[in-house]
Image (cartoon, rainbow, N blue to C red; front, side, top):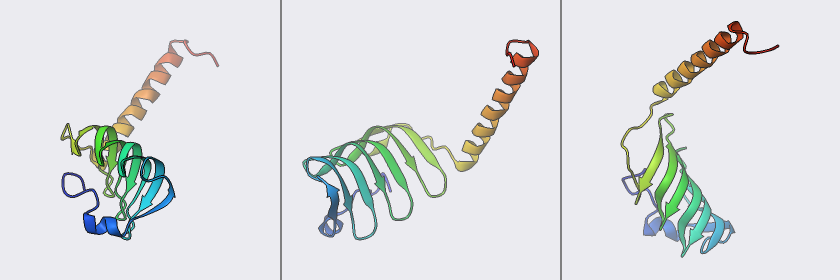
Length: 130
């Protein structure tokens, strides 16, 4: 969605409705007829501040927004399981590295193995009392 036309078009905006709160200046939830939904802070009718955009296909961005675009720290998670966590500028990722679902599983397994290893090592050295 990002780096394409990720924010709703003028036509899509015609079918959008503020479901709750203040979607002009404040906090609120806006939903579009296609099922896309933004919940968070608004300024001058645009997402601005902290918020989450959930697309109808399951993709989700959570983080900082500025003038209707991701800008600052944020996380994009695609339905494929791939994700990017990092800095955004004017709707674009600053770094281009996307962590794939496979890489994420591998990192989690590696971290778990390290934790088990260090736990056993500490226990062996009598540094942990039971």
